Length: 222
Length: 222
Image 1 (cartoon, each protein chain N blue to C red):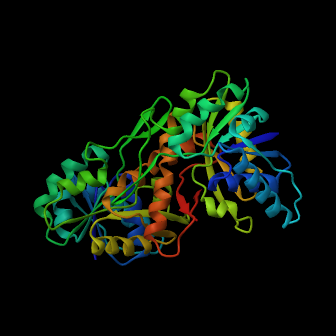
Image 2 (image 1 turned 180 degrees about the horizontal axis):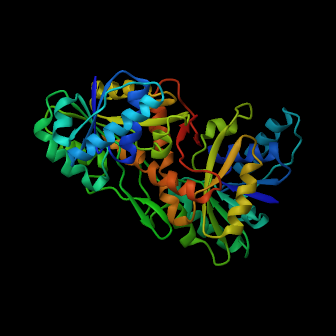
Image 3 (image 1 turned 90 degrees about the vertical axis):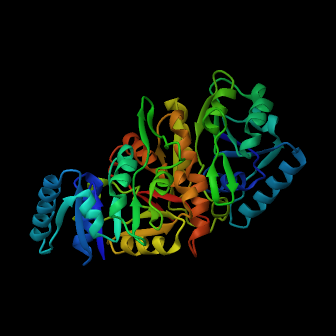
């Protein structure tokens, strides 16, 4: 399967790109608004993988071209760029493609980090509203600490939560998630449940900031 | 220390009462709106503890009397009774007492369980607004599955999150939490961060409902 990481030059995109390229044989392409930047980062990831004995080709393209080439398209961009990014790549998506959204609306305030969803109720719902007909949306990978994900020496041992209204799309993403070593994918229901999933992101930051020795946190349901 | 569990005849109250009476030497008193019911349940807890070789006295009182006797008062009542309960016991609380609130505003809707905070922004903030001057409020124990907590054979191995604006009160509750075997208390910051903590409660229900073999879930930060 080919996976495009739009915003794949950023931190969560880097982590997912490295993990999929390292642990699976899926074809990973990096997207960016700046194709030059996409190619540079793709080269960096190839070098990192190669240093670990994994000789993988990672290509970099402008977002539209990356989305055009992939069946699963991950919107690894900040929440305020999500809607624009979906719009920019809409014509590159085909019936049956899957859009994956890991973003959460997080606002830093004086007393801590808080969940601030967009008007649609959640970032996942915002993406679902903006997605072209025939393209399914899955919320996933919200609660992965970017630094830990991008460090292939770091063991994960954590869960990620999936929300989607299309069971086939959810299953596709579940399998991709579980192919990452140490990651367990759990079903949190439909897109109507996305706000509770996305709220974990600011919570993880608050817990990390208030407890000595805890950083790059993930969560495990037990 | 003496701990009062208001609503200590209900499921989360039962679990906390049994765990503290079993694992610690703190004095545990059960509160209810109905003193007869409080005494009945206190007797049940004594029997359960005694069957495990722990001969502990557990007393049951009407909420006001239970609160009057304790330094730490846990509001183990449903979220829609929280404000009334604080009002009912306000005259029984003294300067330096600590009110602990484990309730979360959870609403069952067609597509899943959702976080519906009261107008104050969170149940913890609602309690803080209603608490008498000189009484500190700590949000804690939101994310403990009641059935698992009340089953002394069940290992916990999970975390609970604390929010409070008074560091001394938070420390008092942290110590009480960590005296329960298998429970780790983590600091999630001030009461302004309570909504993200309380949102975990509906999330746990959604995850339990959508994944085979998962029930009575807790959460661990790793």
